[in-house]
Length: 305
Image (cartoon, rainbow, N blue to C red; front, side):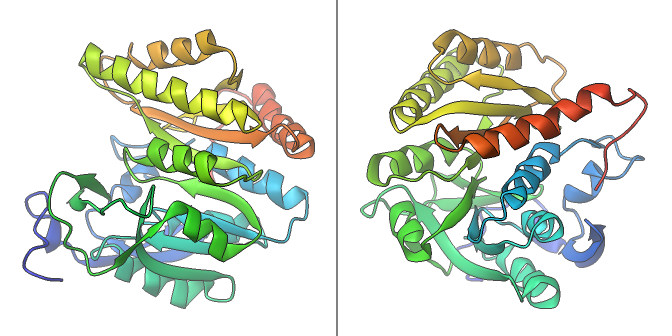
């Protein structure tokens, strides 16, 4: 890493590699990574239902016995890859831009997942003429910010990335704030029918910022409906299912965003959202079945991998 790559929280680069068992795989992760706290009952960050929605989506895709590739943009250390590998037989393309996280991703894939997964070091942009942004590293993430780009990877547009893969079983995007821009570009420049899973980071204490984010999300939902994606499954980021909504119903989207704004003691920052194309009736049906089973679980039962 070059000297210019110092868009980091204090002490971030002082972390050491440690082993953390995730989905029964011994992942190598940075010693301060938040992933450990999410699945440690002793931690104040403990979220036992986190990633429940993504697991169910992968299980639903697998149930259809589809032969294609999961694209994971913002792959981090490979935790998403571990989920896909554990719950399916799908191939996985893991794309990560960070010079800090990519070596962890590459080592984990080489040690644990190389028969089905590939690591790619790249910054994914919405359009071919867009310049990559600098990354600010903190917690367990690398967030694009208004700073000079200093990672050692090249940039690739989301459309060119999808074109290079062929059959896509699922497009997953988790890049801390740029998800909506990438998906909007996908819907503008391609005609996918695969499920699209992404993070909507809508939480803020500033009402005007939340309204701006809501307007941006509403625009994306209108575009998705025009492209045939009329169903959206929502989970809050700790993993609790919020609901299945019709993306053509603007009031339901506004209500979901308003719900997010009521968390004053912040433990919920956004939604994980899965768009399902209207032609993919079997996937939506299977996903609904898996979700409905949760309704009969005793409240004392904690979900785990």
